[in-house]
Amino acid sequence: MKIMKKITILLVVVSVTVFAYAYQPATIFLNDDTQKEGLVEWPNVDARSVNFRADRSSRVQRVSSDEVRLVRFLREDGSFLDVERVQVNASVTNNPLRRWHFLSVVERGPVTLYYVAMTHISRTHRHEVPHYFARREGEAVAQYM
Image 1: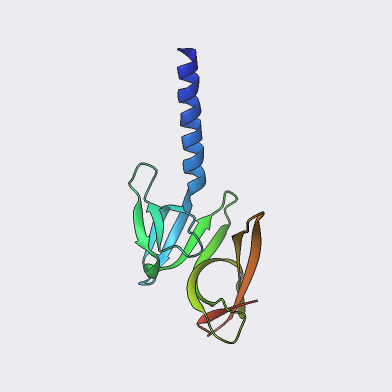
Image 2 (image 1 turned 90 degrees about the horizontal axis):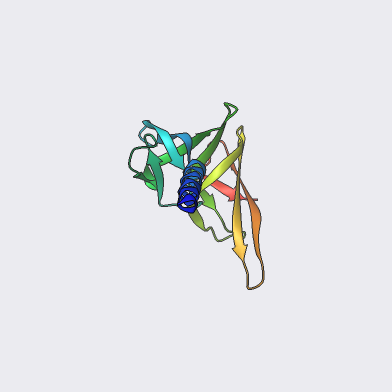
C-alpha cells in the first residue's frame, strides 16, 4: 500500500512539473489587434498553431499560427520574452526561401535581431545550432545572418 501511495505522489508531482514547463503565463497578440491572456505552450519554430489555455483547468484551444503576430511570455522576475511570427528568408543563396517562423526577439530597434536554436541530428550526433535573423524597420522579411 505504501508503494502505491508513493507512486501516486510521484505521478502528481511529475504531471504538475510537466504542465508547469509546457504552459507558461503569456499573452497572445493576434493580427486583428485583439489579445488572449492565459497560459501558452512554447511554439515550435514552424508551428501551425499555438496551444492556449485561459487557466489551468480550461481545455486547450489551438490558435492558428496565421492569426498570431506575437506571443509575450511573462518571466518570474516580471520581465517578458517576445516570440514573434516572422517571415524569414532562410536561404543563404540568392534564391529566396521564404517561410514563416516563430523566433525569439533578442533586441528591437532600427534593426530587430531574432534568435532560434534548431536541433540538427546526424547519424552519430545530435546538437543545437543557433540561428540568427535580422529585419530592418519597414522590411517585411527577416534575413538569415
